[in-house]
Amino acid sequence: MHRRALAIIVSGMLWSSMLGYQPAGAQAQGATRAASAVRAAVEKLGVGSKARVEVKLRDGTKLKGSVSSIGEDSFTITDSKTGASRTVAYAEVARVKEPNRGFWARASVLAVAAVAVTAMAALDDGGVGY
Image 1 (cartoon, helix red, strand yellow):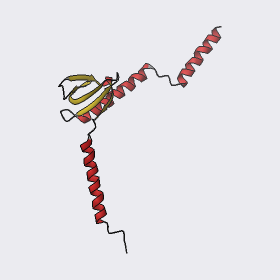
Image 2: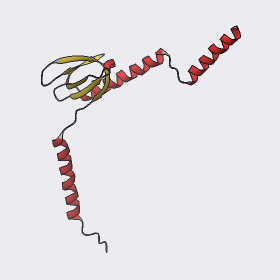
Image 3: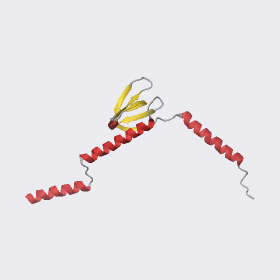
Image 4: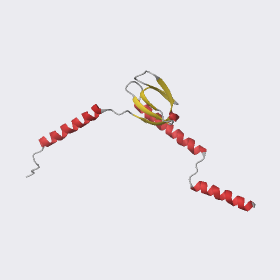
């Protein structure tokens, strides 16, 4: 009877190690890495009214605004429309990104590309190399 119970326990331990069971310490390290990646992204954006950011929290909440302060464990987002500020812990954040630049930024890039292609075509002498 005891041998059978011991065999079941040992086989369960082997299966869990083969299937990638991660102890709680490994999960905490992953969360710490994710939080430090979020902190690096926020620090890259900087602080001020030009440091626009879109944040998606782990609970599904989406925040938009500018980064008004950066702390060791959290940062503050200020909504430009309402002026409301919210402090967010790095561990709460699922994703950080810069907002889309909009139509005019894309249009200016396309206009520059069109001018460059037109200039190259005008300078081309027809491809005759003789």
